[in-house]
Image (tube, rainbow, N blue to C red; front, side):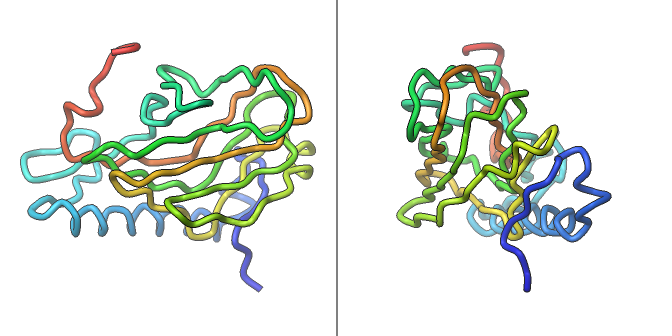
Length: 190
């Protein structure tokens, strides 16, 4: 049976789950192909420095992800969760001329306060995931077998059920594809 996701210590992904390393590569390749389709006349540069007629790619910048309540995250994924129960990690709409290829989500805080997670992309609601197992891992991540392509102007929400309050560093494992380099050149809160 093929798994749709795996809980893994992110630092050991390559050695323990090589098939998911291939799934990550396939997700990025799918996003490159989709970029060439939706941005007519542009080819994938496979670089953060695209030339004329190419689109670039970089690891995600926190500012491209809406945090709790849609707040802009400028330089970090670290957020203060001040209530228990269902809280939003990330929500928003992908900006025009930007696309994200999401391969997973990482829980990098020493204490993991999240017990469940659910994801909504556009009008598609994914099944809830019980995250209790991640407490056994040092740098836990949920890696998706097929990844998710968030196209420009697509809405999304990642939510979790918190059993305690406090600061949590929860980050998306994403590659961002961009049509215009000016969209990804930013300092601080600009």
